[in-house]
Amino acid sequence: MDARSTRVAERLNPPLLVAAALTLPMVAITEAHPGGALEAIADVLNWITWIAFAIELVVMLAVVPDRRAWLRHNPLDLLIVFLTPPVLPAGLQGLRVLRLLRLLRLLRLAQLMRDVFSLRGLHYAALLSVLAAIGGGALFVALERQNQHLDTWEGIYWAVTTMTTLNSSIDPSTTGSEILSVFVLLVGIFFVALLTGAFAQRFLGPEIEEVEKELEAEQLSAEAVALRELHAVREQLEALEIAVERIVDQRTPR
Image (cartoon, rainbow, N blue to C red; front, top):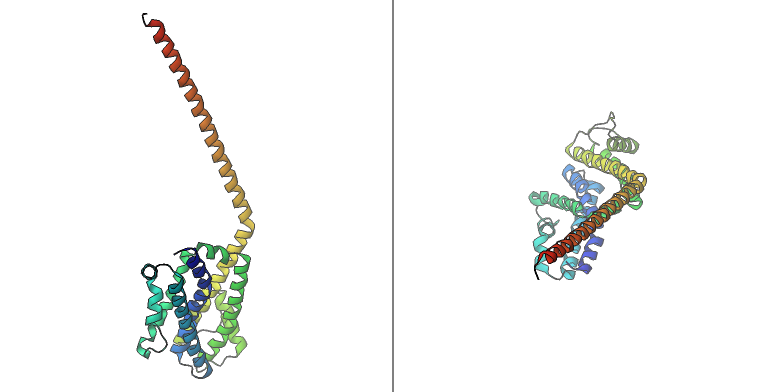
């Protein structure tokens, strides 16, 4: 990709990663078949996430200089659009989990990872955690309606204790709520990891940079000493060569 398409891809990656993350609660709601507003929300999320991936595919094919080369290096983007449309039969809707594989692209985004561990990234992670606690708690109450009589606050309490890996007396009893608990737990672990990384970068970053500068200075100093020694050896060799030439000249008969 050229510089323009790279910039476009970097701008599209954050919303696409959010769309990929929304796939998990969407699948959880759909598989639970709660009916009513929740199932309608799941259908809307299904369309929104798919449309986001379709828009990315169209935009990238429009800006990349070589479309075939880009498709060879990004086959997942094409598969997601053509294999996970919401209009597929119910038996093929399980292919929507392919959208989660888009999260693996985080491993190749060094600049994005630096942004994630920044203060701004921590703000976004905190917002995501709050939304996961509130939305996950409300969804948990809806999924457990037939087995447990819980109010919204109890659902939020369950979500917070799950995110912080604390034990509570509320346990999931349906497949949908079990999938939801995994998602909420991953969000909590992700936020704690970002919090730890942000603190480490904030307090240890200057010290690490100072150590790197000292090591670089020591390396430059060692290189300078080695160069001086090489120059000295060269001068000695030149002096020795001159002395040998003089001796040879003196012994050569005229």
